[in-house]
Image: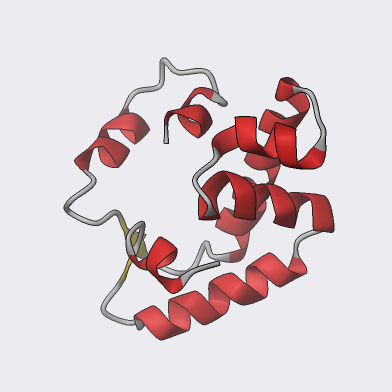
Length: 111
């Protein structure tokens, strides 16, 4: 995954440098099962969303969505103690988190 991809989507807290965050993310990605790792890279790293996961892994849309969500949850769990904040230039990310009226997979395809 390109360094710019992560740098443009998260910022490190005062206690965790960007290099440490990237290292932790690489370790977390490596620990994922192969299908979840591929889904995370395609959906989030390449910005293709669940539609890209469906094409890349030859899955139906619902299975691709579920796999991408699973990968994201596993990564969130692995990085739970890393305090990361959305960058200021992406205010819609914070707005999406506040609205609970979306279906779980909706945000995956709106990237």
